Image: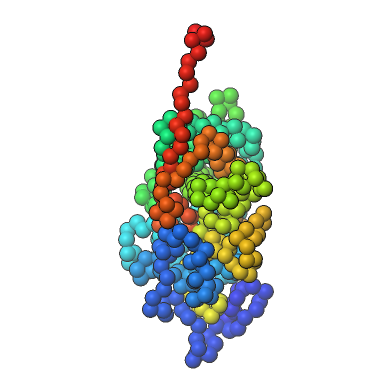
Length: 436
C-alpha cells in the first residue's frame, strides 16, 4: 500500500501532507493526552470511550507511560479493516519506534505487550509464517472433545469451590477465577496438575520477559517428556500432538506456540469469567438473565462481551509506513491499539438501549482476521461451565461497593484484582453410621 493514501478502507482518502496550515495531528504533537492507565482502571469503560471520541474522534493519542505514546482506535469499521490487514501494519512489535527511547520502567505492565521477542511467535508473525505457526493450534484445538472438556472443567471447578465453600467467605478472583484457567486448560491439553502449573508459570514468566529463553527451554523439555506427550492408555495428548505437528520446524517452535496459547488464553478466560461474576453480583437484571430468565447462559455471556468487554484491545499493531486517518498522521513505527472494548459504545453500530446488539458476534472480543482467537467455542465452554458451577453451588454477595473494586494495569484485558464475597457456608457431609 502506498504511503500517500489515507484510510485503507475501500481506497478512500487524500494524500499525506494536506494543507500545511491545517496539517494532521502527529502522535507527539499534543502537549497532553489521555493515559491508558486511566482507561484500564475505569469502572465504566464505555463512558471513557465516549468521552475520548467526543474529544479526539475515532483515533486517540494515548500515553502508555510518561513519554511513551500510542494510537487508540475506537471505531468498529476501522478496527475490522486493521485486523484484516487492510492497513500497512504489522504485529511484529520489534518494529515499534518506542524501542528507540529509554523505557521508563524495566518491566512496565503497560509496555509489556510491545516488548520485542527473541524468537518468532504466532502472535508477532505475519503472512505465510503466521499461517504456518497458526495451523498446529487450529488442528489440535479442533479435535478436542467438548463433552470431555465440560466434564473436566466441571470437576476442576467443583474442587476449587470445595476449598472455600465451608468458610462462607472468599475472594473469587484469587480463589476461583485466577486458578481456573491453569487447572482447566492444563487438563484440556493433557497435563497433570503439577505439569500444568509448570507450563503456566513458564508462560507468565515468558510473557513478562523475565528470562523468556528459560521458559521456552523448560516447556520444550516438558513437551519432549513421555508424561506430557501421552496419556496412560498410550494415546497422544493434545500437547503431544502439538509438539509433533509437522508444521513446526523444532520443539522450540511448539513450545512457543503453547506458551503463546496458554498466556493469552489464561488472561482472556480470567477476564471473561471475572466480568461475568462481577455483573452477576452488581446488576440484578444481568443476574436474572444468567440464572436462566429470558436469555440463557450463552446469551448472558454475549452480554458481557458487549457491555463489559473482558478484552480491551487486540494485540498491538505497528505502522510500517505513514498514512492519514481521522485527521491524524500515523507515522512508521507508531503503535496502534485496536480497542475492541470500545465497540459496545460505538454509536455507528449500537442503538440507544443498553442491551442493543445482544446476540450479535460484532463485539469483536475474539478478534477478526488471521489473528483471531483459535478456539472461541472452547473459551465459551470453559467460562460458561465455571459460571454455572459456582452459581449452582453458592449464592454469593459482594462485600464491597462496586466502585471500590479495582482492575489491573493492562491495556489488553479487563482483569479484576479482587472480588470479595460472602455466602452461606456449605455444611460438611455427615457420615452415615449405618453405612459402616
